[in-house]
Image 1 (tube, helix red, strand yellow):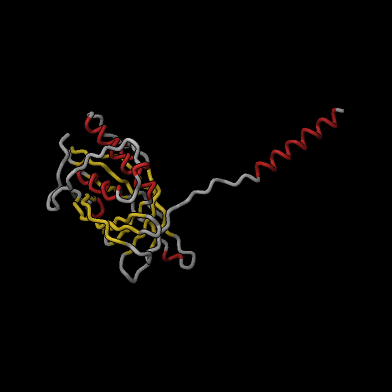
Image 2 (cartoon, one colour; image 1 turned 30 degrees about the vertical axis):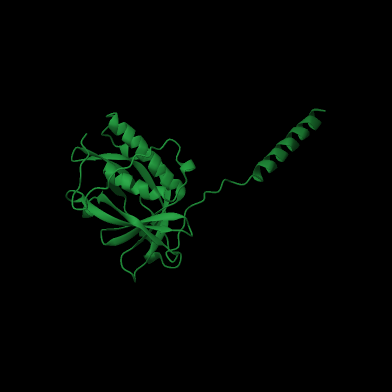
Length: 230
């Protein structure tokens, strides 16, 4: 009898184990965009990037923004250290950006911004897609990329930040073509971040943005780097 109960117990465990194996793993839907897909100009925004190799003060850049309707993604195009970068955001990422900016504005108004090493990750992260290329005839590297949302202080002034983490491109046919993009922080004044948020809002539904204020900001002048007084 004891042997029979033991066999039943073992048989039950096998059934449970077999059932568990049939449950598929959750699939991560990474964003991918073809550079040959049709696109339309969505606007322009200003932001700041560090100088080459982190030397000197950061510098303002005017960034072109495009919309890719086939993939329903928005692309920021900028140049940094001799490369052209195409940073893509899907709808989920755009919503996170807008909600993160709302939280940043709340912390800013409440004087709740702290100078620490984790502030650039305070409002979460998004999964985007990055394409980078040095020249039109050189390797076009591409990979998914994580972008952290938060803030940082520069020259004692706070800036909303999108911290683009390093991305790895692996070419299965030629190892010499492998590329790694640099870690890079994008610094926005509140007005600059709001200008990008307004572009994002054109491609998402109101239902995707619960509790987001309708307040708009005027984009900054292109020949200045305005500081937020804090």
